[in-house]
Length: 141
Ligand code: 8DG
Ligand code: MG
Ligand code: MG
Image (tube, rainbow, N blue to C red; front, side):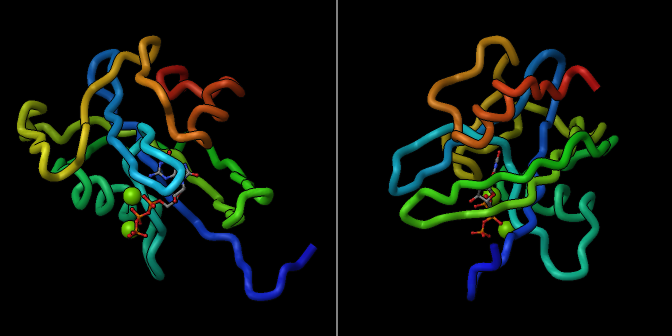
């Protein structure tokens, strides 16, 4: 049903892979801290790849390469106090060649780190947790 004044938003998130690990960072919200993929809102006129590259750079300082579109999910959390509806495009990428993984500055991204896919930290950001429970795995594309 149409809800006056509310529109879905488009978000691009990035599974930045290094070996068998993925980059996650800490998100702070009123509902508590959780770990999530870097990413953010698609800006007017951007391609998905441009958005992925820009958000990762803004949030971690890292440059990415070999971008590949994985999934599109419709993330609905309508029963929350602040209901949200995001169309989330997941992109897989690796570090650009010149990039030294150890160069991540903690200042860029609180709690940012590389995690093995089968030993992910908890709590995960709930939409990510949900996607993983539904079988999402960036290593299987
Ligand atoms: P801002 O400029 O709007 O402050 O931040 P942004 O970096 O552009 O946006 P964001 O808050 O990081 O991401 C926008 C929304 O995307 C977030 O509030 C919830 C939704 N989202 C998901 N899954 C994921 C995910 O795995 N990672 C991130 N970062 N956001 C996600 O539904
Ligand atoms: Mg963000
Ligand atoms: Mg943004």
